Image 1 (tube, rainbow, N blue to C red):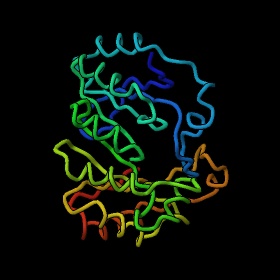
Image 2: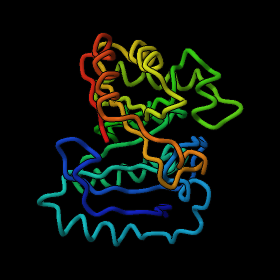
Image 3: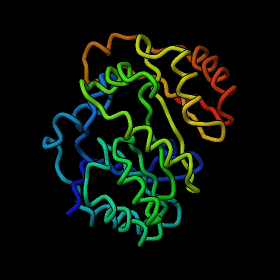
Image 4: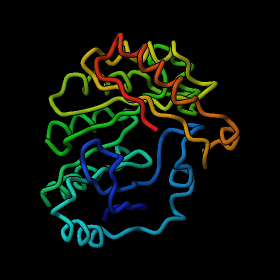
Length: 235
């Protein structure tokens, strides 16, 4: 049985150039204070399970225009049966995209090796060279940064498409952080700067933070392009 807590039938924004359905899995091992899916992280049992049969019915009925499925959360790699879920959608002839925080490189490596994912989006919370800042951004007192680095290396050295993305939060992230993250992911990577949204945040104090202006993020992106070829602002 798959523990699915959310389902968006159609999305044009979760996978560039693709029309997708989005699957939400519960639970997360991070507590990012700016997370906007706090209920899925903190109170997943308040959501009813969504049957895979109902999802399949929609996907099969709309197979002509649905390109693939995005599996997000929460943190999907916490679920031991994630490979089975990916395999399930692949058998329907659909592409599969995974959203992850990179904390489970073993699962990530397995999914790629078994060709169960076609695209991976990995969130980088802060420069991996600054453990203290990473802990703050992830909302944890203890975090194995080496696992994050391993996941970055896996994606840098795989043939499947991928992107790294960072949610830019005033007070947490600066242009210097963007530079350090850019250096760590490599020239040929794809780097997305996501604007912070002060809505329904895990830490209520973050609802009072004013996001960066679009122009400020564009300036950060220009700086990042010195180190990464493909940089985009989202949100």
